[in-house]
Length: 319
Ligand code: MEV
Image 1 (cartoon, rainbow, N blue to C red):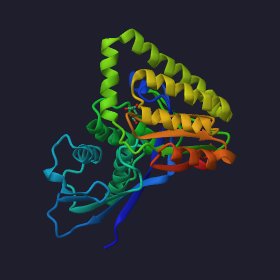
Image 2: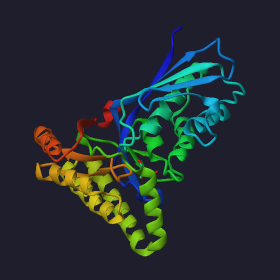
Image 3: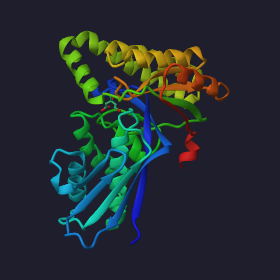
Image 4: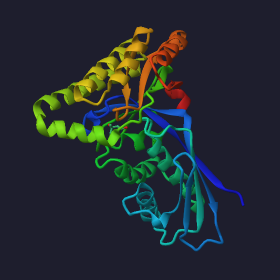
């Protein structure tokens, strides 16, 4: 029997992670070449409502009904049934296969959610809007950490560069030229739940000092938006590196991430910073194409476990 499938991209946060949880803006890009895929096969012999979910990447093979209500997939299917009004799910096998590294700050959870929702929509004959996809995927994001800003599910559902501010309409960014990024994995999983909680604790303990760092990140992001829209990669690179020192002050960077950031800059990157939750995961480096190989080598020498180039294409290519 043919299966139905859908995909969704990874994402990188260019600037503004963590501060975005506190209502500051952030800029995020989709990474269209690295994707999560979800295939759904109708399973007529199964009882109606029986959903079998398999993911080789995280070694998961389970029925939906044995998962606790707070599990991301339960939240996702509940949101899907609420949105569609479907009382009973048809029997189905759901297979997840994702190229997006898990716990790397690249939105693997949100991408699986969006791909699954798109596939479920196709399966029952509904094409969701990006806003519907983002809203339903947000329900699953809450399972990953209690108070997500919503940036990951939004940039992934819309698959366009975004300037995102919590609870405000999304602004899509116009990119006049391509941006060349290198994304380097530190070999240590990102600790998004822990770092988000640590920032919250810091905010409670020293609200004035921590609030000031958050505000400075917000100011930087507003400036960076101008650089993005002007294609001014040199200024954007500098803003990324400044964002990194503010993230260090927030306590979400690590010596390993710092090491990678410094290696990239010393090899000629225009700027570099951790991306996503931090505590591990990835750094990104903004590079001119002619320096890309040199920076990549330097990142490997500094202990990166994997480095891949990601070109964020100019806006015209998204239409
Ligand atoms: C995680 O990709 C980004 C954080 O800002 C958390 C969030 O926005 O929900 C760290």
